[in-house]
Structure formats: C-alpha cells, structure tokens
Length: 67
Image 1: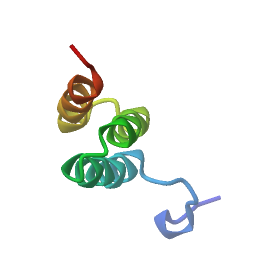
Image 2: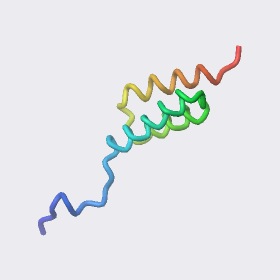
Image 3: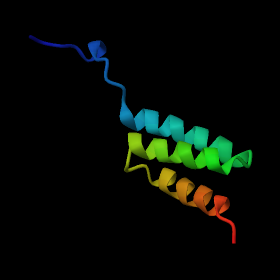
Image 4: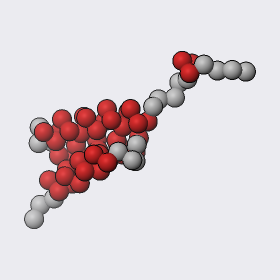
C-alpha cells in the first residue's frame, strides 16, 4: 500500500513549535511574562531543538522572578 504525503494527519512539530514560539514573543512584548513562559515551554515540548524558544523561556523566567 502506498500512501501519499497529502493524506497524513500528523501535525508538523517543528512548524507548530514555531507558531507557539511566536505567541510567546507576543505575550512577552505585552508584559505577560508568566503566560509567555508557558507558551515557550509548549513550543519546546513541540520542538526541543528550537533555540530561540529556549532563549525566550529564559528571558520570561527571569522576568517572572522577583529579587
């Protein structure tokens, strides 16, 4: 049985990681760092190799910490 690439129902984890990362960036720009932290963590769950999501997660985490 031959399957065509158009018939797959599997989402592209790299693409969804990028989309979630963009949401994290927007949340971070709005000062919503706790929500951004969650978005960056979700992006990394979808694509653990997304380097900018790691950076964004670290930034958001730093912004949520109080000294």
